[in-house]
Amino acid sequence: MSFEEFQNQARLYVIGALEAEETEAFELARKHFGQKAEDYMAECYSMHEAFALSLRPAKSSDALKERLMAMVRERRQTG
Amino acid sequence: MAMDFLPKNGAQEDPLEAPAPRMPATTPELEPGAPTDLELMHAIQKEDPEALSLLYDRYNGIMKALILRVIHNEAEADDLLQEIFMEIWNQAKNFSAQKGKPLGWMVTLARRRAIDGLRKKQAYARAGERLQTETEQQPDAWVHNTTEEEISFSDTRILVRRVINTLPVAQQQAINLAFFRGMSQREIAANTNTPLGTVKTRLELGLKKIYDGLKELRDEL
Image (cartoon, chains in turn red, purple):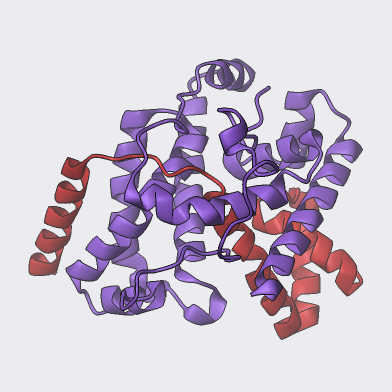
């Protein structure tokens, strides 16, 4: 697999669209290209961030945050 | 099928018609003196609840929008949002800045949890029927009162959408089904009655355009 082919597959991989039978060859190529591949993968994952940022934020209740913070404080005390 | 990436409420949401944004950034601009996401993550790793509180204030809207895009149910989205921020608290030690930015890590985590939740739900319903129903009954998460948080994200949203909206609708649809529905290429082909090879091409071309467009945006900074 050329690096360009790897790049194509990496973009599919990070959004979970790579088929199972393609994943094995992709993982081999990932190992083969080493750090260069990992750097590219990290860049690809920035697409996740972009997809989320393309959405209009949705409102959630204040009560939800209060529940969350209570759980965190409890976990902190017992942990 | 409606395109989740496409604007839903008219010209105001159309990036192509929107005025040129002031700041060409792909992440939201922070108030002067506000801690960065990375600083907050480091503080969370040291078990500082205030840091999680700030991170929640900054991103709960985006994270909930992402969850809603996947599961389309307000109450379930709230439950999942709480679980995800709890997981951020518990798993913060696994975050590494070398592998990416905090928001990317959080979104990846949230998406995975939301898709897991969707798959559990789909175990009780035929996938095709469910997709059809949810598309028709999709809550209008795009319309609500403007908040300060929304204003701070609006420039970023316009820029990112501008990149996404350069794609043909079919490419947007394929990426939407893969990213927000967790569908494989075969599942997308089956759900859209499209040949597998066409789906593959649409995904490859669309993702390359988005990747290149986002890179261009970052390079302009």
